[in-house]
Amino acid sequence: MQRLAITIGEPSGIGPDLVVTHAQKVQQEAQVIAIGDANLLQRRAKLLGLGLTIKAFDPNMPAQGSQAGELWVEHIPLAEQEVIGELNPANAQYVLNTLEHACQGCMDGLYDAMVTAPVHKGVINEAGIAFSGHTEFLEEMTNSPQVVMMLATKGLMVALVTTHLPLKDVPAAITEKKLSDVTKVLDHDLKTFFGLSTPRILVCGLNPHAGEGGHMGREEIDTIIPTLNKLRDQGIDVSEPLPADTLFTDKVLENGDAVLAMYHDQGLPVLKYKGFGAAANITLGLPIIRTSVDHGTALDLAGTGKANGGSFTTAIDYARHMAACKQA
Figure 1 (cartoon, rainbow, N blue to C red):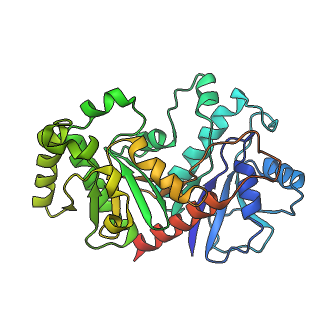
Figure 2: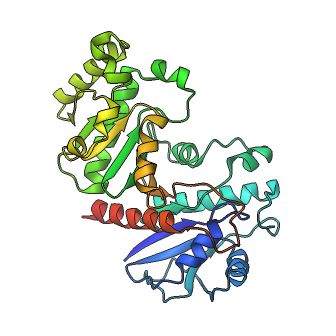
């Protein structure tokens, strides 16, 4: 039986809501272990009117599931009790402690995967701790040379060459090395974690009409096409750079397993339009499996019972699927 570590995220946001709500389901396919403050979870369950029995996680015991209303917890204490909807820099280190614990447990083989509820980058930085996000934190902790952000929903997976960059900086960031490294990680992880023996990667061009022979930009001619040719020579099945406005059509997508977009807002709006609330954020290129929700902390929804748990469930499902493929 798999063990999944679930970090419960920003204590004043919807992460605890998602965790205690999900615990109302019978969990027999995997042992789901919440990493965070047990008292916080009890308080949130009570506020939401949900029954919750906390079961202290013992790593020395065999993995086991749980009944509806039960939750395995690895207790990591808050610095200060949370106030729902109000960020508190005093709890910033607590949030990072949960991530560090889950990541280290995955690296040590204690957990098969980690699933992260949303955190608030701003309040962590306000606490004087430089933090740009889960991805970068895990990249540094695992000493991974190249990580790749991919979002997935039923029928579509989109990975990114560049992520959180101003649009004006994107062309210069798409170098031969960057494009090659990202594509190799995507190809490797589609094989390792998704069971695809020869994945077909559909690649977006950077410019409108994929540059239209250089009339709308030369990045395709100067960098992208030569790099893709070299990758193809190495046995990686990549398309030519395709116009993004027609790539995201059923006729084209049915001929590929994943899409590689050049920048954040080229690929993700389509993915989120197709599957928002049922999509997962997946970090590729790590020695561990990490999935996450596709949304933020939603401070205004915390404790209201209105949080949509679809993305959280999807992230857990992808974590289980990836762990199974890795173990196969």
